[in-house]
Length: 117
Length: 112
Image (tube, rainbow over all chains, first blue to last red):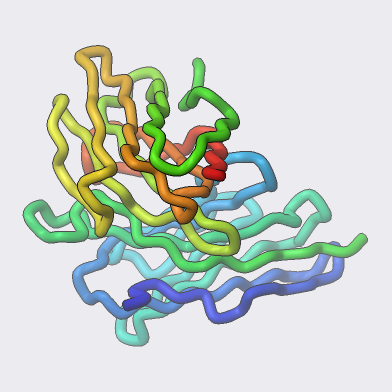
């Protein structure tokens, strides 16, 4: 049962253009969502998060959008840079104590982003 | 300010052996979570420790056990290793159970 899905295994964009990474979830108890970036031989690096009480959160070049009715979130990177090339994971958790998803992160399979100079 | 650290970085074991992996959380963090990442997959939650107790557990057999010490550092133990246990083991720490988790570099385990 894949509760968090990233349906695009890879994405290739030109430097300076926008990168849009997508993520879908099925568990309606999820109320906190995160994006991580991972380089080979390193652990995931936290990028940005969003709570279900918001529909958008920005941090520099990174913006996360949340559509609760569609159970869909996306990460926009503008402008994309070659150093952004990495695997991007979305993750979800439930901040409501007592639930089975409380505090634990459920990850998607990841999307490999390649930004060409 | 040191981030999350893990040791060892790499480990090779044979089937049936036991292994212990270690994690030191980010300064100020009191919650440690462990994840297993198989090749080409996202990390899978193993368990989470808070106040030296296992608070949450994922779908992993009892061969996987852990411990959290009073200084918040943690160990992951895996008994009776199987070939399928070969993976990257990630430790993440957070300030409290439901806060953002920050990951260490991982321990790459190979079971032969």
